[in-house]
Length: 323
Image: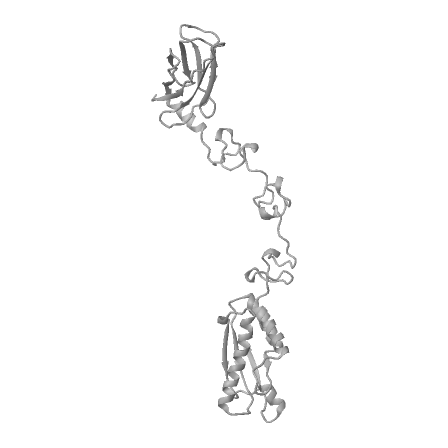
């Protein structure tokens, strides 16, 4: 079998107390080729001139390959290092100022492979495969490397989930946010929390449908003779339009101004354009994007009723909406 060499890189620090003559040694055992720590390597310190069996000061390396050992044996000392699957090796300590040693072990290939396998952590959760009951799923050490139970699969474990059977974000303790209008858009993201809508429109109804319904009831704003000033009723109507347009920047509205036949055609054309612009300006002041509005004036060319009577002329002094 192929044999690999391992190296014990140990810093031996002798601490001497005259009353007790205590020596303390510490170090780390690693694989020379992979630099992986060797667990369960046995480090023994005994008097140099003593041979044969007996009880001596010895410890096994921990998972990180480290060891700490204290002895009251007098110098010179013999340090022996061994591990299952590896040949033993030793070094001598004759003087207290000898504090750095390199001890090589020869190990079978299978031993190295086992060491490497035992230090793997497939799911990178800090629990080694050999101790991990779920080596391919992240989980805390207190649960043997397995994920904590999470019945609703929302990423919040049952132990800390205030709503373990309903999915919810961690910032809301695993509970779903309230949805007063039951439209599938939680209140915290619903711009219309008391009216059923669509997630596409942030929980509000489709603006086109709303605008269609509103304009089916009334699609005109009327003006006084020779005026572009908006009445109180007109502004209230435009407020409703602004709310809908502000819900979606994709809905565009065409605003067309008209006039009755008093005055010249040129004057009436200008007046109709001013009326359309007056409506547009009001909507923009209420948050509507200018890109959503298109204005034009048609003067007296498209009367809604006859200009021969005042009742008809009052209907022709108007702005009309289309989208």
